[in-house]
Length: 302
Image (cartoon, rainbow, N blue to C red; front, side):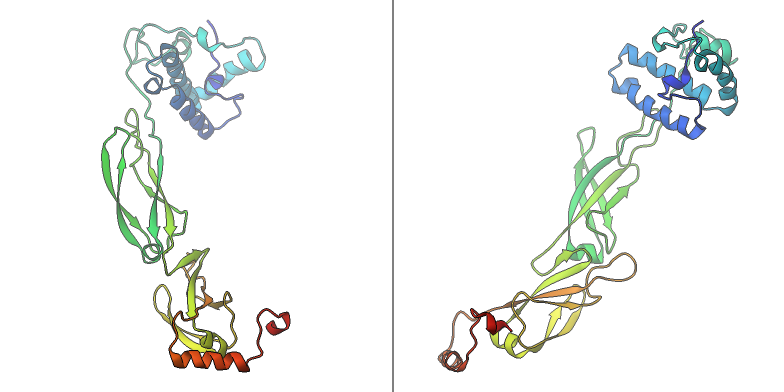
C-alpha cells in the first residue's frame, strides 16, 4: 500500500499548518484541477478526486491528527516517498484504497458511486464606467449594459454614492461568474472614473475652475461671484493679480470622505476684448501714452 502525502497533494510542504491554511490551499488546487475547467481531462479529474480526498482528511481536526501520526513516519522520517499518480481506487469511487483502509466511511461501500462534489465560488469580474464630476459629487444612479459570461446582454442599475472617489470600486454581490456545484456566484467590481467638465476639474480633493477677468479688473481688483460645485461664492480679487495666478477658497472643493472638503481653486485668466468702441480705443491709446509699464522689462514685474 503506497502512502499518500495529502499535504503535498494540496501544495503544502509541511503539516505545520492550521485548518484555515488548509482550506485556502484546497480551494486553490480545486479551482486549478476542476474537471469543468479542464475539458474533462482524465488525469486532472483523477487529481481533483485526490484533492477532495486530501481535504476530507486534513480539513477535520480529528482525522488530521490520525493522519499526522502516519505522516511523521512515512514522510517526515523519509521512509517512503509518495507519488500522486500511483494512487489507486475502485471504479466509480472518489476515494482511494489508501483512504478506504485508514479513513473509510461506513456508509459508503467500494462499489457505491459517490456523487459528492465540492462547492466552488465563482470568479469575480471587473469593469469600469465614466461618471461626471457633478454626478459623482451629489451621487446618482446609472444603468449599464454588459455582456455576461454566456454571451447575453444584461442591464444593471448601479447606485453611485455621493462623494465617491476617482478610481474607487463599487461591488455588486453575486453578479460575477457562476459558482460551481452549488457554490456562490462571484461578485462584480465596477471601477469609477470621474470625468471633468467645462466648468470643474478635479485635482485630488480640490476642484479647479477658470476665473476670467478683464484687464482693468485684474489691474484694479474686484469682488466677483463665482459658482462652486454646490453654491455661489463671493471672492475678492486683489489689485494687480496676474493671469495664471491662483486664488484658493477653503472647504469649497470635493468631499474627502472624512466629513470635510478640499478647496476650490480659481485660476486667473485675463481676457482682452477683441472689438473696441471708439471711446474704448481712445482710452486704451491714452493709457498707452501715459503708462510706463512694460511687461517685457524685468523691473516692471517688481
